[in-house]
Image (cartoon, rainbow, N blue to C red; front, side, top):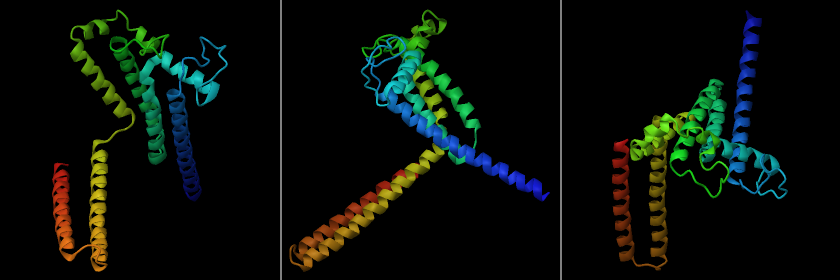
Length: 246
């Protein structure tokens, strides 16, 4: 039993360290991918025009080819992919769950298809992505499809429906939690409340020093103190109101 328990602990330890390693690798990959995408230049070497020698991409030739693959395949929506990979890495590092990779790859595929469809109907033309446009060649596959015809029945509604679907699938891909987001906002509001109270106290100390050194009069000091109290009460009222909303 002791040997079984010992091996169980070794396996558990190994899996946890492996998950942390994979998580860190995904974070690094996402940062590198993001840098390659934002520094993309159509003049850089790519699979269509490999003879170009001048490279503007931050990551050089590899970054140039990688960013070209993403932009030419799924278009502008590819800029969201590094964010999904980044948060996937963070979640794997924290929760030690490899299933997040499969789950989030599924969401990447969904929002990439939806994004390519969106850009194939709206904002297709691009002076930057001249070969396949903002929609990539995946978006070009939707030409004359029933989805295009369906959206063209009411383009305005189709526009917002696609945007909402892309937003939802992207938020799911980064494992967005509304509850965690609200708690985060509350912490920020609480932090600023403490900072403002501290600032008021510091101002009072400063005013006392100035009044003793006769740089300002006692009457001026009282006026400033009353103004600080009013500001403090107002800030507390506003903060309590915001916290009640949550």
